Image (cartoon, rainbow, N blue to C red; front, side, top):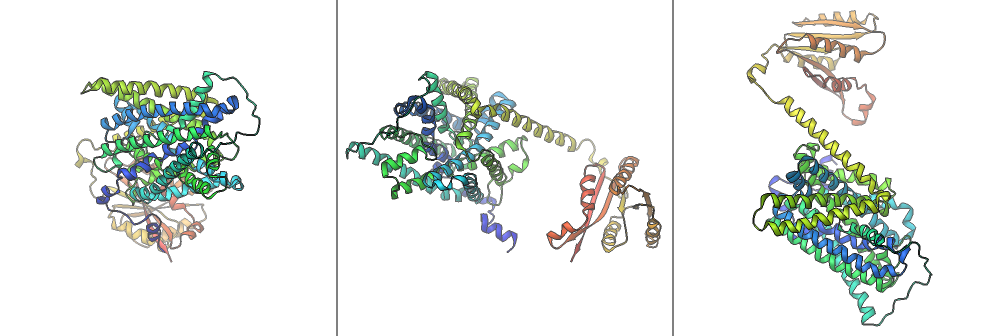
Length: 613
């Protein structure tokens, strides 16, 4: 099977450019693709809050969970209003990066882009690890294999997204709707059992010792922990171009529907957690404990819900796979990331961005041993950095332009700025030692990297641009000297020589580096016997076996002797094997020389392949 046919089977046949519109998402598939991250957080956000409150408040923590989650939903509503305005103002997508760069300049835009890239990669790592935790809740014996299970999840998601946006929308959209349906069934069943059937959930039998005091800071810390639920909200504004026309209207509808689904399910799960006295347990997630209490531990419905939870937690990463490649393409289009990220793959997606997510998330999974709780502080803090820049940028946008009903729009984004900045500072303060401190290091490093890439591209652009009379820069025939390194007369050398003669160069130098054993004299006689016009033989002797070094020094000397309009062409034979693995059995001298010679401006290197049968 050829490589091409394997690729076609693996990701599907290549799509023509005119199929791009068909790859865009309608609302019905845009909702699960761009909202799966936020929707999935119902499976772990409440547990993050309980882990802060429970050691201090014991069973009273579940009652407070409803209030904390209500505050988080209130913040979600603020963000949805703010990002609806962002979509109207910047329908080309890009979110915080475009908003920050347009209103504040280069550095704030790059900080926002860096924060988004970090959060997207962490979305994949956290989601796959959360999915793994759900699997282990149902099958505790799988606990030692946590990193490998998470890695397999990332592999499946990468494969699905490489197949294209529309195909991944259907592939990953149906399971998301399955989870939403399962969650609604669990919520309804939970309330019916208590308020209709009169079921009285038993309280925990163990006496729980509390540690510490109940303070405002405790609730702020719990709120900061639960704000991980809001990661992914900005993905819709980043990916507006991925929607079918009218793209801004469809994107805003998806954003509103997401808020409705998240609001209802969050409050429902939080209320049931209190009603059923769910407490944090090792190797069992809070949502799994709630499902077991409602459906019965080990029941068919329990395992169905766990399967749905595993799927949605895993598919939450799809938000990043949809949003990050688009963001990378925009940043790369501005010259701050490698331009390869602007190239669409065979399935009209930005496949290089998808592969970057795969590799970066895989490294995090194994580095943190697939521990969700360790990754979340870094996750939430990076997200709210971009949120803050985006809202502050939108506030500046309205106050600067003063168009239409700008005052009420500026008020909405002003409130969003204040809230997001407060939450960002809160997360950094309360969870600094838990891992949020990494944001202070990673984001500046990414900004410096982006500026270095931009500087390189600007330097290249300035260097290669044509100035003055172009005709004066074009060499006339006969201005090129050819150098042919030679060790012996062989079939590959003869093939390279025939190509050299076709160039019509006025001067050909056969150059030999020897050890002084007399071989140079024999080689000179053989070459002189060919009677090639304009050709001459030269050699250097070395006893240090540094053939490449001597050759490069000779080429540098020839380059310095060249006059205006002259250039040097180095022609070398290169053995090429019909079987790839046998390449390792041959000396790679010509490959190494070519890599080194490519660094010299006025030297052209030509490798003439000779196929070994």
